[in-house]
Amino acid sequence: MPLVEDFPHIDPNVRHIGVSKLRGLNADKLRETDETFVIQENDQPLAVLLTYEKFLAIQEKLSSVANMLDMLRDKGEAMSLMAGIEDLRQNRVETLGAADEAEKKNRG
Image 1 (spheres, rainbow, N blue to C red):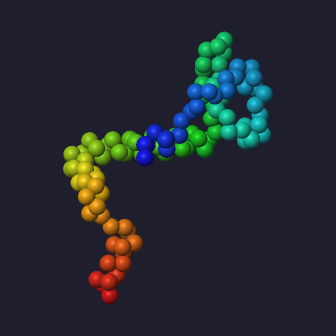
Image 2 (image 1 turned 135 degrees about the vertical axis):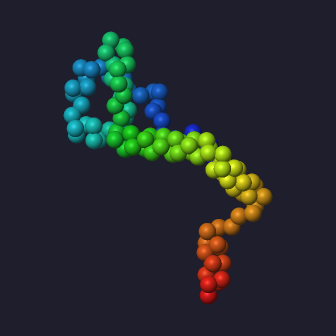
Image 3 (image 1 turned 90 degrees about the horizontal axis):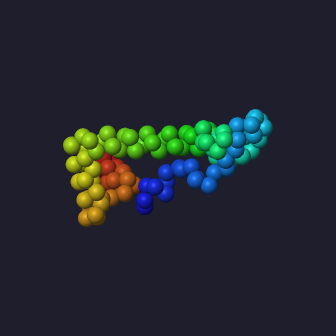
């Protein structure tokens, strides 16, 4: 599954509004909308306005990507990740439920 599909993005077909129209967006209107606005003046983009939920989702995904990059920079971590991927390819894995059951049997 491509990572890009999961990544929240800002649609390039967002609604462009002028600075003067921004004043008309009160808190109630902003709560009701899921639109992303490009705020512009004289056809020059100045800022992007999006819901707080979209902002948090983007921040979360960026943090995940940054953490993955940090992990891949560590040679030991990268090798462990590659070994895990190879285990998946070779079907040398089991579900967590099966692993839990096996552990319970070994203890019991």
